Length: 68
Image (cartoon, rainbow, N blue to C red; front, side, top):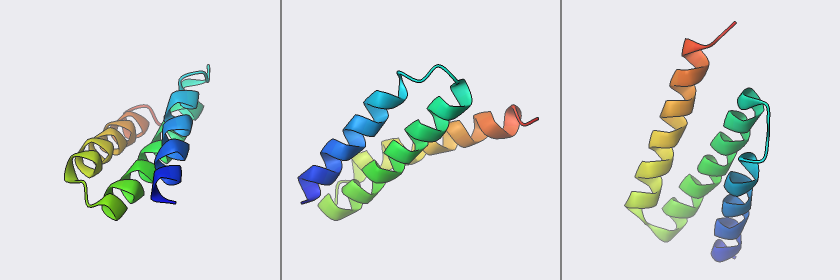
């Protein structure tokens, strides 16, 4: 079951790059990263948690910088 979550997270992240609208791309990618964080906690894999938290922080910074 945990591996299924990892595959779903992968599909969401990869699929996000097919989205043309940058805001929607970032939201979808953040969702995938959140799924990866849950996966990382379940697997107790700190590098997965760290990289995906970093990605979410970068997207959040972009949203703050580009709010309209």
